[in-house]
Image (cartoon, rainbow, N blue to C red; front, side):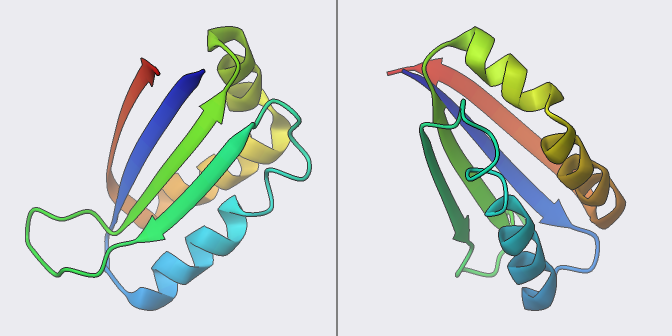
Length: 95
């Protein structure tokens, strides 16, 4: 199983932005079959080094994750993310 972890930091760092992103991300599992597991967390500890939202998703393999990344619905969410964030970091690994 491939685990894809992404952390997002917003430009304005508001709870409303975090909730809005979570809502948008949660629209993806029902329409993208490659997603096997999808967990979204909103940070609860304020810190200059903290990120605001974390996404942990799982896929069968690298090919499945790549299909997810180019899916039109994912691309639409990604366009929104690029508008409202100032930093995104990701890590991928096999469990």
